[in-house]
Amino acid sequence: MRRTLLVVAVAMALAAILGFFTPSLSLAQEGRLKAGFRDMTWGQSLVQGMTRDHEENSTTVYDRATDKLSIGSAALSTIKYAFFKGRFYGVKITTKPGEADALLAVLRESWGNGTQDNPYLKKWVWWEGDTAAGYAINEFTHVGEMNIFNRKTLHEVQAADAALAAKGKKDL
Image (tube, rainbow, N blue to C red):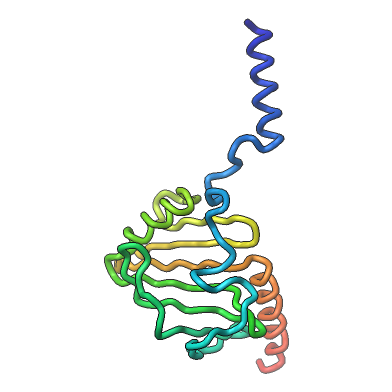
C-alpha cells in the first residue's frame, strides 16, 4: 500500500513537472486567446476607416466608426486601438453601464475563468503566448474595461515611455 502511494505521488510530481497539469487558471484555454482583436493582428498597420483619437506618450490611439459595438450580448461604449511606431499592439474595450457581467460571461466562455487575485475586486487576467488580457468591473458604475495587448510590444512601449519621462526631467 505504501509503495503504491509512493508510486502515485512520484507520478503526479513528474506529471506536474512535465506540464501535464494546467499550471494556472490564468492561462487562457489553449488556442483561444488570439494574437490581436477581431480582424486586427499584432504588428498590423492602420486599416481603412481608422481615425486618430489621441496620443499618449509613445502610443497613438485610434477608433473606427464601423466597429460593431457589442461582444455577445454585451453592449460596448468604445473600442480604442493602440499603435506604437505605426503598428497595432493593443485594444481597450469599455462596456456601457450595466453590461459588464455580460462581457465577463463571454470572456469566461471563450478563455476560461482567468485569474482573480483578490476575490473582493472584480479584476481578472488571462494570457497565452505573447497575448495578455485584463478585465475589470467598476462596482459603482457597473462598467467593464478590458485591455488586450501584445506583451512583447508593451515592454517596448514601456521602455519608450520611460525614456520620454527621463528626458522630461530637465523641464522641472
